[in-house]
Image (tube, rainbow over the protein chains, first blue to last red):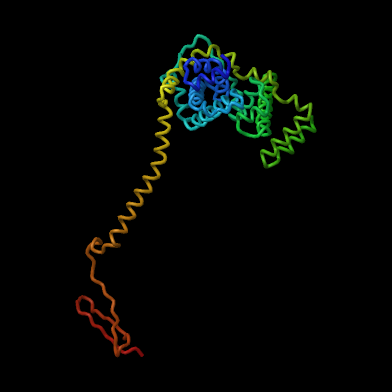
Length: 182
Length: 158
């Protein structure tokens, strides 16, 4: 089933096409969300909200544009919403960290294998910088493509990407220096 | 490299952040020595989670399918209905405050001003001019201590 078949099927409300869309693009959306929000539980929530929005608004998708970019734009916006929501409830999250009952509310508390998580260094970047870095490194996106997702100019997207690369490199060099001195 | 660091320090002193970012980026993009101070794509990949490290998307579909089926059946998903309720509540709250304030103001105006009888008992108090020959007189009021007698002496104003 190619991309256009999947989109057409989803527009008709075909569950097989909906499933094919999630299986084709699920990991892409989840990886972007995970790199932006930083934890699996929230990333899965973002992923669910993204696909539900896609199913609801698919009739508004302009077929002249890249579907992947449109999908990632929604994923980015939902991730930003999640980051803002998390910021608002930061105090609660910090308290919940010490409450095992809250930590075990969803998912498997003892996963068979450790789930991949982005480096903690990424927390030093803004959500826009994290998104720009993810799209550039994982998807090979250019500044123009990143600008489409972030809804900004290519020049601004270049600045986000440049800042992300510079900050993380400096942090890595600093860590390396500390290890050598230590 | 010293030259590059000096340029960066000068740019860092600029108050406008967008301008500062653009100037530093323009310099570093042209400067081969500074290029080495940027994270490479491979280094970035090592820090990020790539889609191929996330395994099968089947679990994701299991999570989404129930909501997707509800959506296909024409029912709105619960979180969205909740969000709509919050939007309605956010719009209704200021309207309620305005309505309650307006009602209170109208009620106060309808009362017809200050109700003197509600203020409780008070001594009668009057002011009147003593006039002699049609003009205000020069008046003296005298009350001897320990008596209720009051003498009023009025004379023509010179």
